[in-house]
Image (cartoon, rainbow, N blue to C red; front, side, top):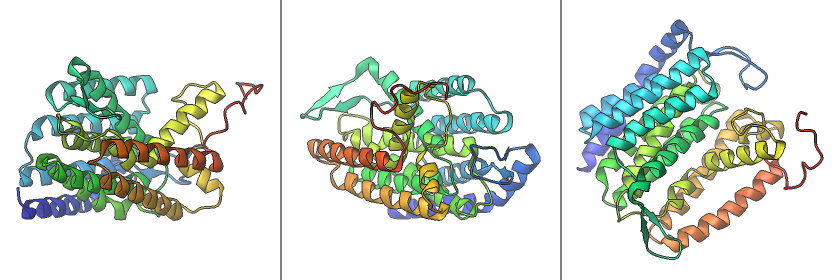
Length: 345
């Protein structure tokens, strides 16, 4: 592969996605893919949610023209994930049905696609996963699909984070000589950037569950193939650091709901963006803060990627910083603060 192939793939992906976005908006209105206002939503008026259709079109066009190897299983899984999300946008699937669908699709991908075969040891060396590679890879892919969906609460947040994360993962893949994964990362970054003008505040078109889950899957595929597959791998803390904002948001959501004694999948209004809105930030300011944090954590992770022990130490330090910040903005409460509270409140 040469630089021309990467550049052309990026611009094809961005251009096709941008060109398809107005058409996806019309299709969303026509097919009833609409995000209706409710007490948990930020939007005050109905909004079309067909952004995933445009992103998939840009991804597929750039992959075909750019000659992305092993496109079949990646494209098929991406299509199934998009279709599942679109069905959820249209019919409001239950959490159990949606998760079962995700598991079925991801299992298909893991059985015929790349797997996480080794895990780095913080104290040096590698662990060979063997048969455990299937459940570990499934857990990783499912986690990324859902964290990008969970954080998709304000205009441009998931799209911008996906662009920055894909760019960082492209750089890492090149460092490791995984040029196929780097090409997929460049295509994903292009699709995210092409969609961002339609999704940034004030948004004309939402990602919807279909688009957010699709971006999460593509990031999972990039990181699995480009950073975590094979013996010449890097610490899993590296892609976790790159996605520090959505990972922190997910962990806080689980802890918060456990503290309150409610199911971990039960929606609430204490996510990262909700708390900053309550503190007086605008949607644009929140997106900017998230982009800045993602850019800084991605830069740190890339700089320390080749040093496994250093990356784990950096991840621990930044984890403590994010934990403190989460406490300060009210995403979680100190342990013990919920004692004596009525769980039904």
